[in-house]
Length: 514
Image (cartoon, rainbow, N blue to C red; front, side, top):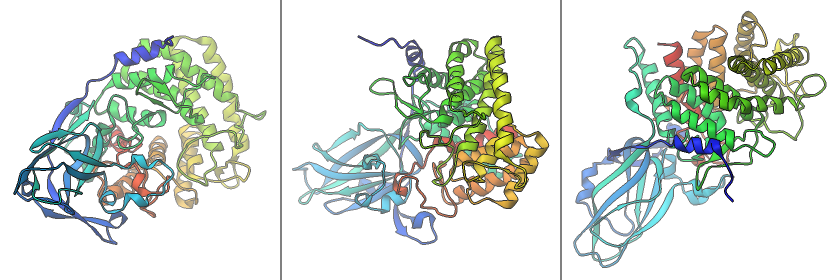
């Protein structure tokens, strides 16, 4: 018997049609070892694409194509023969890569903890030449390496045409031009950030089009903010909110991510902060769209996340910190997340209170106000260390960037003290620093909220600007300027080099700096 999923049905009615456009490769390249290049690999020009129409390839030959920019789509190859008629299939290995490292490093040596199947390499047999073939799988790449396993005798292979049909649900015509007064560095940063979001906008807001190709609510919240000032695709945000609302865990909690195929389904991953972000994402969506129907339908789900999250408080009003929970916050092995999660609770409760007032739910609004007083007072009494001048987290009283940033965003202190706290943070520079663009987004957001716009801009230029100087054409999932091979998964090969949570420079530039 089919399970009744009214919100999923509504989400499916909002399924977008993907726009398609053909892209041809820009040049032939080779990837060479270079200790001064990002991750140790440099790209050099090696010829023109036109050479592929006349230069014959056989067993042991290879070439690398550069498509000039990041692409998400379907590859089409036209193959023909010279010297003789094809008397056997052509067998080729194709390797797709977002970055030069994926062209140069052997995938067979991969030892990360995510499945090797995310690495994009395939072996294909093409039976009939001449012929045109469109590969069935969607790939995410800038570079394509073609290696010939056969033919070994008689004939050689040429390529009359190679192209990718790029796909996205983003309408680029909706993106307004920046004012001419915007400096070139910020214009480039905005362009790359917009491209990052564009390539992640498919039939949902994917976290990364190479990996995981999934809808994660932490990414969705930041993608949606950037979408509202660029592509303005409100229906795609609405689709994602309805999917999360209907595909909850058994206890009613919003799961961290959902799958679309073969049919919409929730994962079993629960993250404390991510479930709370459903309320924050709904708050942002309503502010941007003024969609009263969606607000009223989804408000009960948002409220339920607050109730479930409050269950984790101890008798002091502080979140219990033990091995039984998982809160994301950032990819940092040493980060204690108690204080930042307490701040996320306060942050989302304030937005839930606004939603309760908007829908006229006086009883729930009154309850949220009472609980807000409790959790905020507890944060000041038990997590604020007046002698050290920082919020502390966990049994060891850890001082981290994340704890301070999230307490500023939650506005636990007044505006003046928030500014002083961030000034002190930048000066003292605690060891437990941000590790991802996700956490750097919140640092920049906190600085802006605290009236430190110039320092926010400095952080953007130092972080995303350095990513640009290292060759980013879309912004990355993980970036540590001090360790450019850093990966939370054990290998930089598996990192996502077009990642949703890294698109927000466009949001900041268009909202605060233009």
